[in-house]
Image (cartoon, rainbow over all chains, first blue to last red; front, side):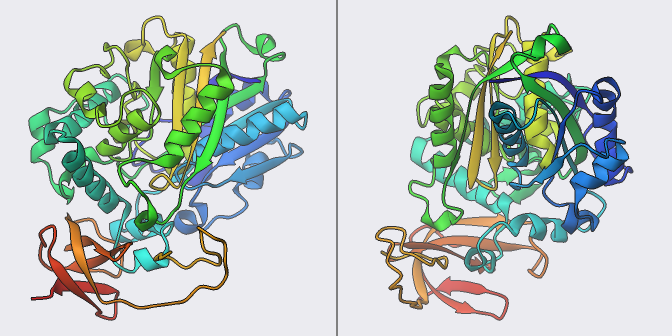
Amino acid sequence: MVSIVAASFTKFGKRDDDLLSLASQSADPLVQKYREDVDFFIVSNSYSGEYNGISGLNNLLTTRFSMDDVPSMRVDNTSGSGGSAVLVAKSLIESGMARNILITGVEKMTGGNGKNSTSIIASLLHNEERISGISLPSLGGFLAKLYMEEFNASRESLAMVAVKNHLNGSKNPYAQFQKPVTLEEVMNSKIIADPLRIFEFCPVSDGSASILVTSDENAPSFSSKIAKIIGCASASSTSSLSARNPMTTINAVKNASLKAFRNAGAKPSQMDFAELHDMSTILEIVESEDAGFFKKGEGWKALVEHKTDLKGEFPINTSGGLNSKGHPIGASGVAQAGEVFLQLTGMAGQRQVENANFGFSMSMAGFGNSSTAFVYQVI
Amino acid sequence: MEFLVKRDFCPSCYSQDIEDSNFNNGSVIHSVKLIATPAGFPDEYYLIMARHSKIVFFCRSPISLNKGTEIVVRDDGDGPVCSPST
């Protein structure tokens, strides 16, 4: 088993810094302190080619960090890159191939044309679906309509995810959006993919997050505050939306969560909080059900009953989620792990969950093409 | 078994004996108005999720289409576009 012993973040948002500088900003504090110990570097990044004209990012960064001799790799699993990077790091350590791994998730996506950005992200879809003019936000719109129809969910409950997450984001110094929004503001904001409005989608963002991962045996030598990964699993589903049945269940989330909990010897009911992949508000609701925290079709009620608020029974997305924190694609899954680390080690400041002993994170690729789930425990 | 996206093996029986077929009609499941659209497509349109036999597919429409509307599909050079069949 492995543990997270340190985390570092940049503020997510529209940044002037270039891709390598963004990565440096979160990695350098860890490099400065732990350079002698790091024996492997993983960068989680999906679109350095498409957005930045850069390839071989891992080696560019090890040179930037003056860790020239440290072996490295880049992990790309689209928006699930971060989770996949942590999974790879865990596997390398447990196999004995490495001892202390620095993981940096980074993406530089802003500054370009919105339609081009929509196309780049939609490139993970099959051509037979992409030629219809489909986009990831449109899939959120369809899922919202299907979900509300099937489970009689109120429209407002979806918007309440955005209200909750923007409030949480306002307490997170790293979040892109740090201003709360009201339900009225969300419901009256610009439609992007109806019925979903602009506040109900994650923004296009720049940013990076870095964590240091080591074996359980090594962890105490780094820090007295540790978040141990006690369970981890990855699962896939068809990337063809048209082949999913039922469409209101994300099988990759369901299966990854089941396996992760089994791997951990734990249950969803034991978790004190979760970081989920809320690219759109409806995804947080569906994932909260498919990960096992609420019965199918009842996740929306948890919003209405304020169960998933920061001070609720089961806080979800204390960081502000992708919705408010932002979604620099390669950074998100690493930032989720970093948020869990902060919560479990009592370093989450104004958004601290009281008595947090167990945490959960779900890093998802595409629209549920694959998912990596993690169960953590504070040591 | 029927499926929309190209596969090398049938996902059910793993046979490689796969036939291509075309279709040009369906029935609307849902309609979503899109404002943030990909490059190469109009700035605004309705994206239609529809069903033909056991296949779910997507097409563009300039107007919203109600659930259950029977549609015909054609290619406008940029991709599938649908309209009510009556």
